[in-house]
Image (tube, rainbow, N blue to C red; front, side):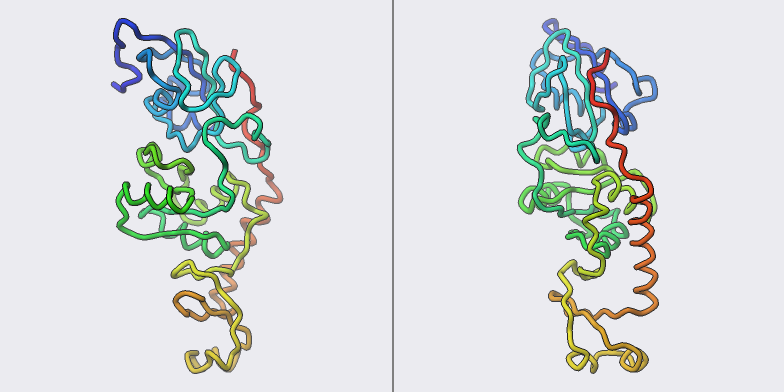
Length: 273
């Protein structure tokens, strides 16, 4: 039994909820894609009840109460009708945003310890992606808050932490599918900057003269290549070999898929009846 199902005190209230699109994945089958009533304490906020029902607040973009866009801090009253919407990739909902202070100006990620493969592919695609195996939930929360990062995780409880304001629950299991999912959900296809970051340390890459690095190259690379980049952080050297071509194919696959299948913009924004 969750706190949302528990019998409230005598002064409790009842609100009607409806969740849209992928937010239904967090609900038990009996509550998906339909209205349902919830009894809750009189002082419960929209954020408290949304998370008590199993949906991390970082997955929510818009909350309508009785047809009006509200913030997470809105205290629910008896008879309220609550419609909860996920992130809208292709529909501009900025005039309705109330649930967080402001969008992030720069796309930066923090991948949790189970998403190392995704972190590497995001760096390959050019996105600033922090990945440190062993970070605690509290450390993840602090880094995301202090550095303005979007938390990527398969742990929905992590996304419920108060200090994490921007996050994405990753549904896919394999890194390549995870990359496609994140690019599609956050509409990032036009922001791809492949081969601009180091796969190992996340620092930016810069062109480097062959003569500056040739003493570090294997003989076959030194003889067969003339264009190189080097990491501005760890100094690792990159060139366009077979590994580069395989990585290029991954990025082109993601880019072309997004061009063929543009984001739909989620559900039509409406109050449930």
